[in-house]
Structures are given as structure tokens and as C-alpha cells.
Image 1 (tube, rainbow, N blue to C red):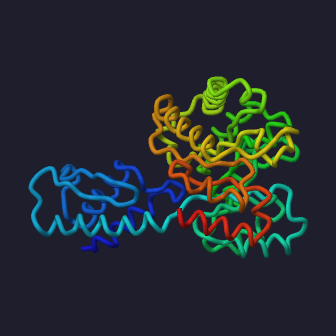
Image 2 (cartoon, rainbow, N blue to C red):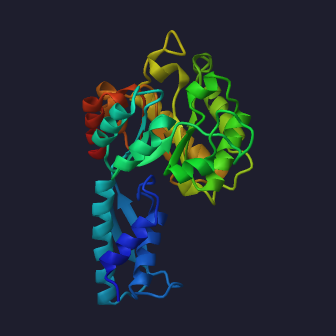
Length: 335
């Protein structure tokens, strides 16, 4: 018979690293499945409920639980609490069209190789970066929606999988600025999820929408979601979808908006909480993972990542400055 620790570890490994164990239902699932694995209960029996505050979980038996099983449940709670505290938030390193040679790409990858980090290098460096990663996951900056054919310059989701990619960024504001529509984004999201890739879907409003007020911003983003996620049964892909909220006016500190400046943590936190509620009510996505992606750097990382509702960050230019990026990673792990 396997120990409760082994069973909890096994159940945790089956859940996406990109989704923190901070949802009551998910934690209950891990513990109940672990107890079944170690022979503690029958699969059809529900013996307890859970409550939590922050990352501390407590068990409340619903029916009589004999001493051995009660001890097993408490042990599982302790193990899970330690795991939750060690997981930290998710950091996506979007290198864009950098660096300029493989040697520098490998050096940067080696120094960025931490748990809960996704590295998205340019396609030419995929193989070299993949070889040196031990803890971080490999991600792609974009992809095409067809599997094969006469599509000059494109790369398919299946090709990415074979190259070792776990994630793909779709709908980044810089791609949208080049003419990528919501229809194209939707095709890419559908193709990526069906292939088994984890999608980091970027959404966010431009300055002219933000200037009209929060109602206009919410309407704009809700339309993006409805178009980008059209035709998907998201219950099947819940753990494969991460959202990156990147207000266009705050990306690259004004590259696409001459008045651009980084958002405030309070505004970003408010919008991310609204996004989570919207995804739950419109698409029945519970415990959605939402990152912030508007010019995150060392100066503002602690302010953004310190907010409980923000689950991580999509980092651009700062991910190329290794000393700065390491400090951002440390900040994410301490929040």
C-alpha cells in the first residue's frame, strides 16, 4: 500500500503546474483521490469539506471518521500546504526577437531556469534552449492554426509539441498590432488546445477605450473573450488556459501608445478580479489563472505580484536583463 505522502505527490503531479492549488474543490479532489489511492476510503464516499485562508487549509469532517483516516487527512493537509507555499506565481519570459545569437540564448536560458517560469525564445533557438532547461518550461511566442500545408513561414502546433514546447502565447498585443484579428486568435487557440499545448491568451484594451471609462473597457474585453474563445468547451481545457491581461497602452512603455505608461497595481488588480468573475459566469471557468503583462519590471514587480488576485506576470524586456529577471522571479516566489 502506498503512503499518503506518495499519493498526494502523485495527485499534485497530475495537476497543471500553471494552476495554483488555492481552490477548495481542487484541494478536496487531490486529497480524496490520494486517500482512494492509499486505500483509506472508497471512491464514492465524501467524508469531509475544506475551508482555507490564504494557503492554510483545515479539515472539517462531515461524518464519523475513524482515527486512522482522520490522521491521514491531516497529514495530506500538511503536505499540500507546504506544496502550495512553495509553488509561487507564474512568470512568463517573452524574449521576443532577442537575443541575437544562440550562445547568448543558451546563457540566458541557463540563468532563467527556475520552477514556475516559462521561457519563450525565438524559434531558431528552441532546440538549444530546450536542451538546457531542467526546471523551467519551454513556450512559443506564436503559432499557426493549420497542421500542415502551403503556409510559408508558419509553424504548426504539432511541430511545437515535437520541439518540446509546453506553452504558446497567443494574441499578444504586438501580434494584434500587426493585423492579427480575434478570428485568427480564435483559430489559433482552438488548434493549440486540441493539440495539447497550454495557451497563454493575451487580452487588453487600447488607450482610446480606457479613456472612455471602465464600462467601455469591460465591454471591449468581454467581446475579445467571446470572439477568442468561440466554439470551445472550456470545461475540457480549463487547466490548459491561462490569461494574460496586458492593457495595450501600458505595453513596452508607450511603443504602441505615445502616452503609454505602466498601469497601477490597484487598477490591474481590479481588472483581473473582474476577468476572473467574467470567466466564471460566462464560460464556467473556476479558479482561472490570470497574469499581468503591462511593462513589468523590477521597479513595479513587487507591487503587482504582491496582490493576491494577480497570479503571475508576462515579462518582456526585463526578462532579457538576467539580474533583474532573477529578482523578479524571487519576488514571485515570495508572494
